[in-house]
Length: 266
Ligand code: ADP
Ligand code: MG
Image (cartoon, rainbow, N blue to C red; front, side):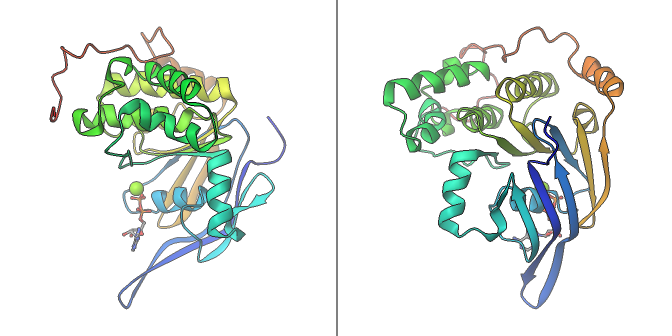
């Protein structure tokens, strides 16, 4: 791991205005996340986790303070510069999936590759491989409305990883999955992050998930309550418990017929 943080935040403050009210979502946050780290951001509902993640990924502008990715101060970039920078270097897994409704799963995953200028054949191949890893090979030609919430969530994960970005930010990426699938998906995400050398920053409210991280940052009322680097022995113990019985680095494919949790089939 390098000596300098890849994600660095200095005196970050974010105030929202709601009518005449001011909501201090982030007060004065200072953090550094090292290259290749898996970092979990935890804290009570409303503590500022999503706000922090949005600032780190350059999706919103801070009220005060600075955000750096590597040597780039993203808090000082114009919207145009930011859009380009995000496309080239960052991935984001949204809580609300943000899939394009008119596109199939494979087209959604291939989209970032299209923006990067990868040809049709190659991007379909890469997107299929990524979907396969998320156990969705048989769902490749389904549109979001033809998939369950958990399946859409995994399409969103596949889309974030397909470009092998330097940093992936994820807001409760397993929030819609059952316990067994959560474990397998988390395992696959950690493996992919390791393979690609991607720094992975994830908001979660699940303690056992956070226990698998290299670093755990706890947010309380818009401030950092604690910032802990988990020691190797604890991490190994937590991961062994979390990933017990998981044998493959991709999510097992589910046959389309055996699908019980399907919301609506068009
Ligand atoms: P968490 O993700 O930890 O649940 P959030 O970052 O979403 O918390 O929210 C932190 C605080 O900021 C909450 O009080 C929330 O109501 C407020 N907040 C978040 N986004 C907005 C917004 N767009 N406008 C106004 N207030 C917001
Ligand atoms: Mg949130």
